[in-house]
Image (tube, rainbow, N blue to C red):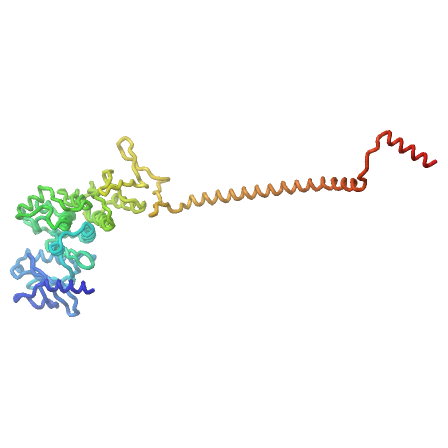
Length: 454
């Protein structure tokens, strides 16, 4: 808490005091300090009657009479009203009909990305990926509102405690609005402009993707990917030369390279960037690495960059269901040295030069494995095992019953034979000296009997 207080005090000290020509009250807001000044006007720190702090932007006096700048200012207010979500500063109040038009947004405490890098140096790969993922998600909301920022750069990104916030929609383009850019001119910041902006072509959500790629390269190296020089030199490099990404971490370089493609159709969408950067941030946080560039948009690329294609979302769903890391696009091992893991549920086998999807079972994806490498219980397998167990148990029981029946039968037969044996033993006990009479012995006994009778 003390560190946060000191940091907030430091930011307040960095604010500039009000000058003599600065107003003290605008609308219902009281002004306290200057937050900065730009091409359109001055931004003040103010507060309302309840003490809520706001960032209040007022058009410069010399531009207040210019209808073109009034239209540009009104466009910024309209863009701020259309965007929903926490990616930008919420619009609080505005007065476009005042002598000096102004509008107030929620105050976002924290330095800009440009100031943080200037003071502390480039960010780590995990920090760059985390900031890029939040900015990509914010651009999704911006583009879904039909708005293209057109001037995304490190100084227009505030690093608040709740995450990055995109500010300054002064040259934003909204659906149905006419451009204020004259032929042969480019509105924006050299080094962060997309080639189509330099040529004066129509801007699309892919224009912000290019600026985001240049911003991520700056965050990783504290330098522009197109170097330094005059505006003409910088614009020429943006259109005709490849960006210099030396110093960008390997995990981010392919992704940044894809964002800086000259052709808008070859750049990934903001939703693809958000998903991919979240994966990179998670891996880099845990000390792992992977440098797989996102899939460039195909013939379906006429969709806004804030919309993701169905095929990409299906691939993401399969990967989350299977619990396997996404394989590298070229099929070669990733830069971290680990071999790519093919998809279990929809792997591909080569058949005459064409890849044919092969599904496990009856089209079902393979079950996920746990962290210890063991598969969870399969209900079908459990049922089969239970059936086998019941059958075996019944067979064993029947075998035991049959064995017991045979023993009972043998006991019954043995009982009848035993009675005869016992009877014979009784007779032997009564006449143990009994011997059968033969012919001579019988006649001798008979003669002795006759003599006695006489």
